[in-house]
Length: 382
Ligand code: ACO
Image (cartoon, rainbow, N blue to C red; front, side):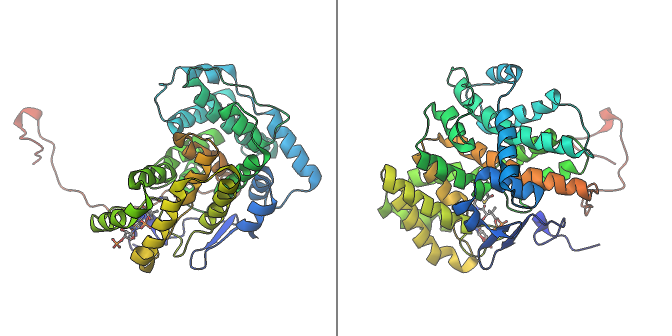
């Protein structure tokens, strides 16, 4: 019996050619390309193509993919009507998980060995997930969702659908770079969940719905909301050190810090910080950024020895807030981006599938005998 490793830390659970993380040196690559190059020069849809099909597209391949995604952005009125029955104060991640799963009812054909089916499912999910996030955003405010606009890029259209304003081109470009940075990250919890679900040969909508549910937790994608809550609680730069000391003394986690894979600052946090600065230069400063920078500095001397540094979530919330995005949409936006990675892993899993079925070390009771109910004392067996 191999040694038990809680959280499967350090245990390889698959082979994958999609993404590589060098956690000691802070290097992240998608299909061999450094994420910095992709964030600076690529687009989210081009990066999605790269992740899923393994190579950067030619101009013609990219135009076709963009066109297909644009053609599939709309969602059925039945899904919109279903969302109108969701509680308006429900979390948008729960709304997204339900609506993503509902796609399986509308596109029930399952032909996992048909490349055309795979392509159609990829296009549908990449196209419709942002529309569903935006639809719930307006529905919960008592409004009708607005239709996607064909003259806007993927990212500009999403910002338009949630803010009801055509975004500044620079804001749309920065948002697109954020999607690239969140698109893939090897075998994190939600991607592992996606691969386990995929390995049962269920449909891709169930794969994405299970991954969305996993991403929602505060130790994973949900941390980006908690970072802003924490910064607001700290309130001002002069209160940073006291907050940190108390959190460390009480063994509380600092949200947006720490990562199973990195022992240095997450390379995505480095780029997100640059993007945040670009936005603040253009659209005005956010004094919470000063609080965040001071916390990073203070935490370096307090937690750096343990390899605890800012992760992707630390600066993303500040960027999204400046873009006018409500806090509880931060994690759904993470999901919009990560669908690309989940689908790349879905496709890879199908290419060499074996159902996931790990073993366990049993620690429960044995040798008990069933007793009639009127002879039992509380919780007792013979
Ligand atoms: N603040 C303070 N201390 C921390 C932090 C943190 N954010 N993260 C880890 N540590 C400490 C732990 O207290 C522990 O210390 P100890 O050995 O003295 O007990 C040590 O570092 C190891 O921590 P673990 O929780 O065992 O590390 P693990 O690899 O299991 O956890 C995780 C990684 C879940 C991301 C953790 O760092 C954490 O909870 N961070 C805060 C939440 C967060 O930002 N999540 C987003 C992660 S990125 C993403 O999912 C997109």
